[in-house]
Length: 248
Image (cartoon, rainbow, N blue to C red; front, side):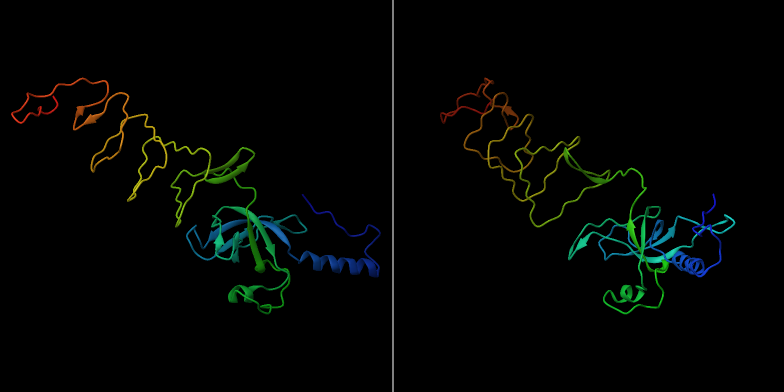
């Protein structure tokens, strides 16, 4: 596939054509945006300041004879993180990602080094060396994600989901926890403000259970003995003190 020239068909002579040709040559040296692939990343999802990526432009160079030349790698480019003050979503790029590279109109190396206002590091303009990475596009289907759609919000991960805070409140008309294996709660105290229904066995391995009233519709075991409403039991022989023996 070759190039189509913007050069006027009326001929190459004339001041206008010469000036137009020079302007086009200068404009071709200006870099604005392009698609790039991430080659390397300094961060890997840990809690840290925003890092850098090494990227490679994906649109190759083509000369007048249609010979392709691959771009080299652009090293240590700042990448975008959604952050405001101390609040952020940590979602670092990964090698192999495809995203957008923006090229600053002036040298930004001094600003990157100082992390603040500075003069241009050199006289270069619209150069690929002054790239900023914005990810990502043209990437595959994720396996770990936060999904927003008309039915609600889905948070999914094949690994551990950890929520850490000084105080966690869940406010909803209904809350369901479906665990295929088990649920473990480790806390000094566990308070339920309301009625409690157990559709299964309750086992107390240590400690004591105190309640003003215990209503059991089937079995109620005390030290292995059924003292529930549907059980009839006998006591041991009356003793000399007038008390019956233990439950048989």
